Image (cartoon, rainbow, N blue to C red; front, side, top):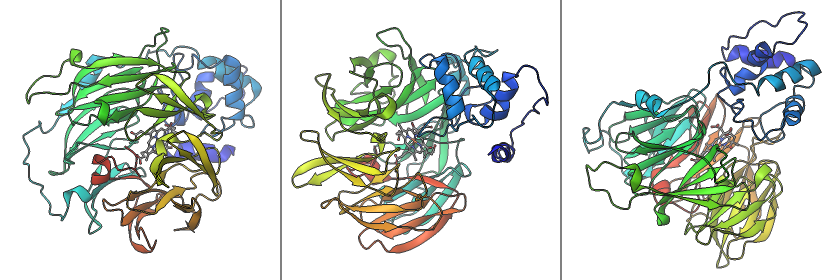
Length: 508
Ligand code: DHE
C-alpha cells in the first residue's frame, strides 16, 4: 500500500519532499505534500480530489475530517490513510487543512480577462469545412484523458479527421453550438476552450476559475456558462470569442456561498440551470431571447431566478420538457423530483446506492415515458415511470456503473460496470423487457465504459478505458464488432446530431 502510493507520486512526476526520519511534531505541510497534494493540488486548490481550503471545508466537522483521512470516503477516490499514518499525523493534517493558505487563492474578473486569448476572432475563418465527409452532423468528438487529447471522427466511415491536444483533465461533456460547427470544452482547472470544427482550429480560450466543474452552452449558441467549485462563481461568457460577460458570485438566500456542482442548459425555458452543492437552492439564469448580430451582451440582459429547494440537490436529470428536475439528495441517498414551474418537490425516489442521475436516459415503455440510471455505489439500474414517478424495477447488474446510453432507434440500453472486479463488462438491456440480454467483455481486465450511438442509432462507439485502450465500433443491433481504433484512455464520445437534437438516449 505504502509503496504503491509513493510510486504513483513518482510516476506523475511530483516533487515529493523527503519526510523527516524522526520528527517530534508531525509537519502537516510536509505530510500534505507527500500524501495529499497528488489529488488535492499542491496549492490545495483541488485536483482529482476537492480543494482543501477552509471555505470549502466549512460544512465538514473537524472530527469528520479526521475520520475521512483515517478511514477514507466510500464511493469516492479518497483512500483510507489509517494504516499509513499515525494518529498524531492524521490529527495534524486535519488541523492544518482548516488553516488559511499562506496566499489566499482567488480568481477575479481581472484574472479571467488576463487569461483570455482569441486566436481566430469570430467570423474571420472560412465557413466551408476544410475536410470532406458525407454528413457533418454525424461527426464524433472523442476525449482521450490518457494523454489529454481530443479526436474528431467521421461517424460514417469511422475515420479520424484530426487529433489535437486539449487542456489538462477535460471533464463533463463538450458542448456544441446548435449548427454543430463549434464545440466548447471545459477542463477541471478552469479552462474553457472554443474549437472550430470546420477549420480544425482552437479559436479562443479563457480560464474561468481555479476548479471548474463543467460548462453549458445556451440553446441558441450565443452564451457559455461555466460552473466553479473555486471560486464560488458562475461565469457567463459570450460564445463568439469567450469574452467575459459576468462572473456571478454564488451566494444563497441564507448568506452562505456555494460551490457549483454542475450547470445545464434547459432549451424550452431559454435558461441555464445550476446545481449548487452547499446551499438548498436551484438557480436558473434566463438568457435574452434575441440578440442582434454585433450587439454586446450585457449583464442586465440575463435574469437570475433562485428557487428554494427542499434539500441540497445534486447531479441533475431533466424530463424532456424541462419542467421537472430529478436530483440526488445530499450524500447520494435518495432522489427527489423538483417541479421548476411550481418550485415544489413532487416526489421522493427510493434510490439507495448513490444514483448517477447525470447518466440517466429516458425512453417509451408501454406508452409511458420511463427514466433509468445506474448507481455509483450499487450494482443496479433503477427504472422509474415518469408519469407518476413510481419505481418500475431495479435491474441487478454485475457492479456499480457510471454511464448509461441508448438511442431512440435502438431497442437496447447500455450500462457499464465501472467499479469493482467486473469493470471489464458492459451490459446490454432490452428496453422493453428490462432484462439484461447480453454482457460483453471486449477485453478481459480492461474497463469497458461509455457508449455513444451514431445519429441513426445503427452503430455505436464503446471505450476500452485504458492507456493502451481503443474505441470499438459495433453494430447496435447485432452487437457485432465492426472495427477498432487505438486510443489513450478514451473517455466520453459525443455525436453532433445526438447532442444538438437533445436525443433521448444520450446526455445533454
Ligand atoms: Fe464526471 C459528466 C460529475 C467523476 C467522466 N460528471 C459529468 C457531469 C457531472 C459530473 C455533473 C455532467 C456535466 C456535463 O456533462 O457537462 N464526475 C462528476 C462527479 O461529481 C464525480 C463523481 C467526481 C468528480 O471528481 O468530479 C465525477 N467523471 C468523473 C470521473 O472520475 C470520470 C470517470 C473521469 C474524468 O474524466 O474525470 C468522469 N463525467 C465524465 C464524463 C462525463 C462526465 C466522460 C460526460 C459524460 C457524457 O456522456 O456526457
